[in-house]
Amino acid sequence: MTSPAPSPFRQPKAVWAVAFACVISFMGIGLVDPILPAISADLHASPSQVTLLFTSYLVVMAVAMLVTGWVSSRIGAKWTLIAGLVLIVVFSALAGTSDSVGGIIGFRAGWGLGNALFVATSLAVIVAAASGGFSGAIILYEAALGLGIAIGPLLGGALGHISWRGPFYGVAVLMTLALLATVMLVRPQPKPARKTSLLDPLKALRHRGLLIMSLTALCYNWGFFTVLGYAPFPMELDAIQLGLVFTGWGLMVAIFSVAGAPWLQRRLGLARTLYGNLALFAVVIFVIAVFVDNRPVLIAAVIVAGVFIGVNNTLTTQAVMMVAPVERPVASAAYGFVRFIGGGLAPFAAGQLAEHFNVHVPFVIGACAILVGIAILATGHRDLVRAESNQAQLDAHAGRGERDAELSEATEAATGTPS
Image (cartoon, rainbow, N blue to C red; front, side, top):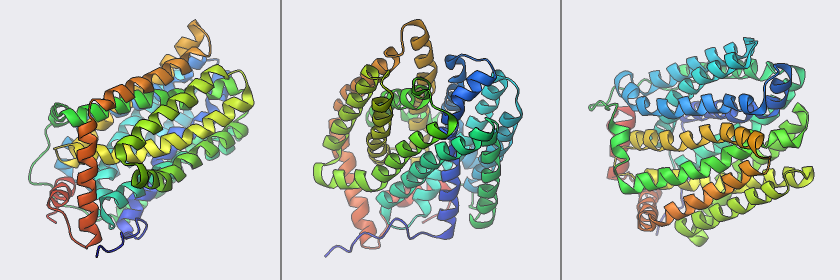
């Protein structure tokens, strides 16, 4: 008889320290949402200029993902986490001191570099050190992501109501706390036997399954960050009101990352859940495109979009880690590089499209991008089936208190510690 799966929330202190830092790190994604209109007004910048706060952050983060494995394999996972956190503290504080949009955009780029070092390594550390099996580790990671995304807009709205500089200083303070927790609670790890090459993540994309999942995520993130990066402008709300709207959205992301995604996968299977979820997300963005001038419908649709983002975040991350025939840190870096390119370019493109055509066009393009993602995903159906089978085997081993050989190998690659 198979033992019940352990709770993903019963973890060692080191895992909780990294998870706490993840919450703060992911707060940075939604933190600027409520203050975008205020920055635009105070610094006399157009919406498309202000959306570059997302673009510089995410594009630099995407490109920097390619070097995270190279850095981590040379200085170790703990010191990579610390380096990322230090950069986030420094550049978020500098963004708060800036008097120009260009300055903030530049400091957000540095923030993105720190986030790349932290995010790619934190996923590998949590997967390696967490109890409760592979699915439990991913659920914990996505719970941290969802919680951070939910809290970020609320904090951004509250501090942004005082000054648009407040959210940047707030992140610097909170990330300092996360840095102290990481220093004290995460144990130093020996360097791995094999050092990762700078080209390893790009070489990993030659594997068909990983490339298909990554391109699907690029299309999905185009829709995701069109909503996140541009929807605040047509809402025409103040910082507090925008913070509340995107907190509702973030709560949907968190709830459906942790509870909705596993429930749907058990009943429908991985492939059908992903196809259906992406299709419904595209429908919601089409609704936003049509009713972008109707504030109540726009607000409701943005909040509902969090449901589909939460489900997709968890299941796509699991599928990528299972389908990639390379070490998980390398797979995470390759996947992050491709998907965050889509997320980074989408907000700026949305601003340009709205200025040159009308406010409906960016959301139509975002919805169409997701439909393209579904078509790409369908070409890798067999890879999804294999990913689900591999995941079931790992979780069965975890339920019996065993450690799968492939997971042990990934753990050693991620932390340098033989399992």
